[in-house]
Image 1 (cartoon, rainbow, N blue to C red):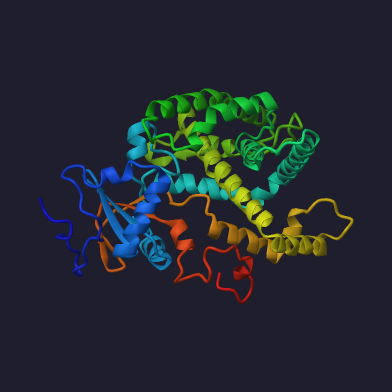
Image 2: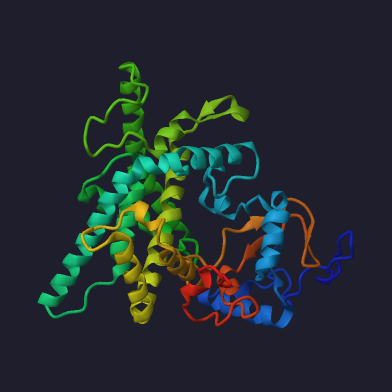
Length: 410
């Protein structure tokens, strides 16, 4: 067996340092703990070895980067070399490669990503969903008010706001994805089928649960996809080409599924996406926005409660922007609220919804921070640790939105 530091790059760069491991197993025992424990292990390794460390799990080399400048060098300076993804999830769940988060870097991934960005997330498309966002905001405000009133009447603590935020975001993303405002029973079934995917379904022996969850998702998603396909056919036969007015006020003219129905894969005989592939893409669409956004909102609200001076400053900005007569903050109002933006950015710094990024795979040997990242290595970035770095942030553990105002260090 060769030592872990024996391999060098063209410029003499060595593999990143890390703890010694067991034969065959490597450092697997270090990673069989809860995610918070793994973070603590990585924090100790970074303190001992520096901002780039490595672990081995069997034959797989895992490299973690905990410095924002090195992360920029890796993701931007060597972006193409790190654009691929490990195949672990594909191998375990038996899913198609044709998803944005798991596709190998190449023409299919670029096509799927371009479709999502240009046809659903582009500002011109985002504006189409303004009525949906207004509806969700009203529902959220009414639900929070109702829950608070019931708690006062019954002299009990109100329920955690996380569930309310999560439900609101899920409703919005379901509407954007499938173009349909579903009734409450349908939402309940979707959430039941979908929710385990928002947890770490591959940890602690949950592979079968993950497979069952995927199967339930597809059973519910495919009829919704088929409904948009039939609607598209009807509009086309009427000469509307997708531009006709919706037949129900709960149906929206544009949806993410509509764009997926139009995709053709040129490297695979110009075929359309299968229903399973579209269901997986829809699952990724919902996963990416539901728990991350609701987690960020929960932490920001907690910080506002904890820091009444910040809450008062934000409230003063809202009143100064909207006036006393306006009952609701409009989306156009938020563009004139720099302190609101600073509060959001500070919330994301102090409490990032995901403490790690989706893992990347090196497509070729590269050098980062003087260390070799060999071809085939899995690379991840400790986002939470970057936000706590005392070398980069003044008082990093404090919630200080002013750092993101003009003249701050944000």
